[in-house]
Amino acid sequence: MKLKVTDKGLVIPKTYLEGISEVEIKKQNGFIMVVPITDVDPIFELGKKPVVCGSPDASEKHDKYLYDV
Image 1 (cartoon, rainbow, N blue to C red):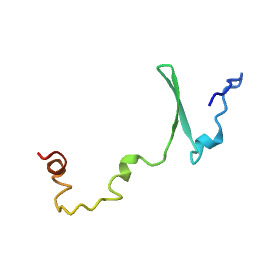
Image 2 (spheres, rainbow, N blue to C red):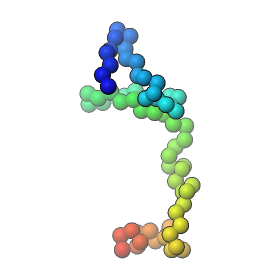
Image 3 (cartoon, rainbow, N blue to C red):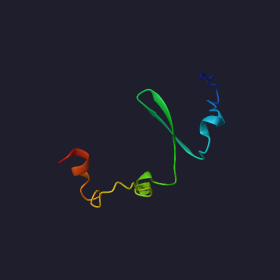
Image 4 (cartoon, helix red, strand yellow):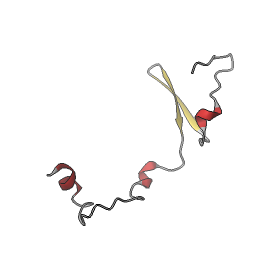
């Protein structure tokens, strides 16, 4: 999509921002990034949907199962 930059700036279509209430705009290495700001830190979402794998010690010895160490 191409957009014209006016004297007031640029308008990003709302369809590109669905479900987003706040963004951070960054300019870095010649690129302009529009980054959604979330209220929830994704690290706190880890472990909320655990996977059952049949190994009772998989959380303690995950390297053994992933890398055969």
